[in-house]
Length: 273
Image (cartoon, rainbow, N blue to C red; front, side, top):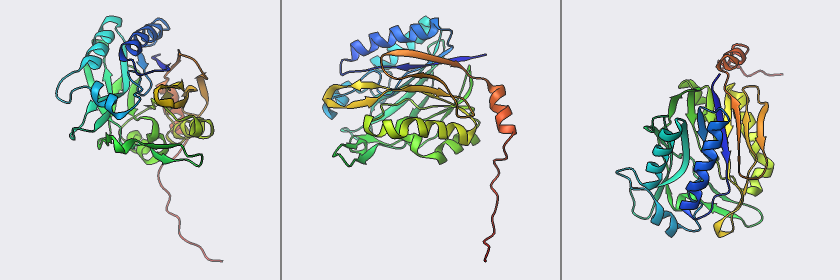
């Protein structure tokens, strides 16, 4: 049965250091028997400001150093890699795209997803995020055939939009990725609930690798990477620390759970007392 790994990291603003750690953790995933390793959002760069995002952004028209490094790593280790939160130069010169790349075990990039739902939120304690101020939103939904079946690609804040997952399921997805750099304040209350809800609603596996701890610029992320099965049961979890969790993706279980539920909409006529 295919095995997928979720990698948890505490990335900083040193790309070379982050890529070195990425190599070590992907190798650990391979050694744990995974056919595919899923990295957290912004694994290569948790930027301290927009100037650094622009400076280290990959070119829009050709593979940059981060993409090239990942392609070589996938080929060397003979493992699929899903890499999220790679900053790619946008159409506007002062903007970036938050891109997810999928590489097969030969190192070929087989798909790209640009994050659709951008994290714009102001919290009661004064904490504020405005991803749309420096990121161009994607427009296209993406599914990818992988060694573990058809995967629906999403990122972090996407998890708050259930209709997105329903559409990906309709496109054939049996499991979802939700690589994230989830804010600590919202994560402690919402992270696990949202992930398990998306699994339960769609009778699909959810693989959610995360950033954890303090980062450049004073940002704190929640960690708690997890993998949920189609029943909404957490089957792998890591609270804090860099590391790897892994689980088997059982497509037979997806089919069995879905067979028990009728997902067709039911029209309800209004009633009066």
